[in-house]
Structure formats: structure tokens, C-alpha cells
Image (cartoon, rainbow over all chains, first blue to last red):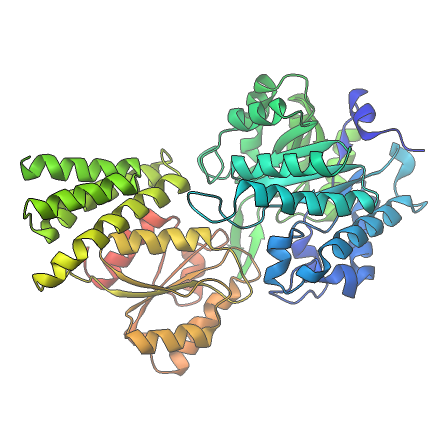
Length: 299
Length: 217
């Protein structure tokens, strides 16, 4: 029986999260323009393969392949008739992968986070997605993820504070699981919508979010500045660092993210020193990055 | 009130992102018989310039830019009937077809560029997201565009920016347009690699680059 994730975090243990999903699935043949969520039903074995790759690399918290799994996003791919099925199944797949004997239990229990990303819609006055509708959309996704057996709801890559609030509220309405929330501070140290790390942390703390942090964003070095700010604004709440593997650069006509496994491992140790209790990577990362991070953190 | 004062207030309404106030001030300008083109060029536009600069500096963010764009749009709509009556036209600096490329549904950055270009005097045709090369081509032909803006936010859909350029070449329209690319994975090197004419990192820079490309800078 797994120690509940919050208890595990309370011991002071640092959990290694996973890395990028979209680009890895595309490398495995996911056609451009097709969302990864389509493969949950069509090619579940590829989803499992990716989970296993991260587990093998040392991930202790893997995220379901449901970043674009809200009704709003799935609608754009014509999959809105299967919102619940996709999310529940994605959770089951991750749960299954995490339960396999080889799933890195050298380092204790392995957890599954129900990944929730932005709807892609703007809220008033800039757009049409009302707060109430947003809460409903997120609650629907969270409910299905919970049904599928995730250990926590993992909201990430948030830019809009109201959307993040709606996601947290929806998750808290839909289930009793811990709720984590991270933001993408990619614009001069704030999110693209102008939210600062302090504002994000304060707002999330006030809502009773169980772990907060920064993911995606711009350069991974910037997270070194964000963590202390968030720690001060929300003392006592476990911090999460899941930045991009560098900045995208052109290398021989390919776009490559420029922080290698060693660099990410080095930064991971510094994130932990600054209070991060969950560390992973985002855009541009692979199991190699996670493996290096895992080794560095476990020492 | 003297027109300078009114122009300052109009600029401020744009800076503050207040569409209702901008509309009311535009109405006031009409009532005072002020030249609507002057109201746009000396009132609204300077406000938008301030906002554009603030955005580029990281002092203002997407919500600010969008509300300011809305304020300017609302005010211009109020002035439009008078512009038509006087047979005046705001000088069109260029005709832009803009969109996010096929396979990519990210739209906010692209919409911001469209907003800023429109505010700066371009005629903008926003095709939205997941736009195929053929759709870009058809629109360029339809409106006789001289600028094409391509947005992509995924490293994988970035390649589709090149597809659009190739499609324009094949149709013999490449020389008719200036192509500008943008999006997180894009870069000046990428623009050069695929034969685009320009690259911009944000909406404010996009306006400068497009103006330069059409010779309106």
C-alpha cells in the first residue's frame, strides 16, 4: 500500500517527476497536429512505453498523458465525446505502468499525477470562457482522472490566475485528492498574462493547494529566482520545479533545447537546495534528462 | 475642450485599456467636429505606441495589450462613419494575412500581433489557427496581400512555416509578399533557413519589422 503522496512529501523526501510527453510521442510517430490524447485509446502501448521509459530513468511521479485533456481542447480534435473515457483510461495506463515490478521501487513508492493543462481559451474580458464553465470543464477532467486512480491532481503550465483558480476549484469539487499547481513564468519573470511568482503562490496557498511551483517557462536558470519567492509567499508548502531543458535553438535545421542532462542535473540539485520537493523537466526533455536528475538528487 | 486635451485623454483611454471611455471620447471628438483621422493619429495611436513599448519592455502583458487594442478598435469604429462621410481613409500601410500554421492551435501570440498591426494601420486578415498552406495562398490572392505572418508554437509545427513559403513560391506569389515568422521555437536563424523575410519575438517587434519590410518605417 502506497504511503499517501503528501505524507511522503512531508518526510522531506524529494520526488523525481517525469519529462516531456508531446515531443516524445511525436518521436514515436504521433502525427503532427494529432494530440497525444488520441493515442490513449488508439495506441495505448505507446503511452505505456513512455511511462516505462521515465520510470526506468528514475521517475517517482509520472503524469498522465492528459495535458490537453479538457473538453475545451479535446473538442478541437473532435474527441469531446470521449473526455471521460480518455482521462480515466490515461490514469489507468499510468497506474498500470507504475505498478509494474520494474517501476523503480528502489526509491520507494511511485506516484501518478493526473495532468491538467490549460483550456487554451481566454476568460472575460479578453475571451468567452466564463469562470463557472471553466470550473466545470476542469472538474469533469479531474473526476475522470480520479476515477482512473491517480494519486493527485497535477495542474500545470498555468498562465492566467483565474484559470488556475478555476482548475483548483474544479479539482477540489471533483475529488478529495491532493491538488498541485504550477505556473509557466515565461515573460520577464511573470506568466504571459502578467502573473508573478508571488501572486501565484499566494493565491494557490489561500486556496489550500498542496504543492506549488514553476514549470515550462523560459530558461531553467530562472527557476532559481522563482523558488525563493514562492517559498516566502507560501511558506511550508512543498515546491515543484519542472522547467524546460533549456531554450530552443537551431542546430542544423532542427530545433533543440540547449540544456543537456548534466546541466539539468546540476540545476536540479540547486532547486532542491532552494526547497523544491518535486523536480522534473518539461519541453525538450527526455528520459536521459530525468535519469541524470534522478542520479543527482538521490546522492 | 481643446483638441490636444481630448487627444491626451484618448491616448490615456487606450493606455488604460478602457473601451467604453475610448468610445465616449471618440463620440466627443465627433461632436466637436474634430477631424477623425487626426483623432486616430494624434489621439489613439500615440496611446497604442506607449502600450507597445511597455509590452516589449515587460511592463505590460497580454491582458493589457488586448484591452488597449479593444479600446482603440472601439474608438475607431465610432469614428468610422465620419471617416466615410468625409471620404477619408486611414492610410493602409499594408495588407496582412496572418495565422497559426497547420497542426498548431496556439493563438494568443498570433492574435496579439494581428491586434497590434491593425492598431498601427495595417489591414489584417486573421485566418485563425491550424491554417493550411493552401488557405494562406487563397487569402493572399483574394485580398492581394503583401505581408504574410506565420505563427507556430511547437517545434514540430515550425516546419509548416516553410511549407507555406514553398506553396507561395510554387504559385508564383513569393515575390508579392513579405513573410514574417514568429513563435517560441522560431528564431532569426530559422527565418533565414527557410527563406522568410523577417522574424519577431513579440507583437511590438512584429510591427516594427513589418513596417520595415513594407517600407513604411
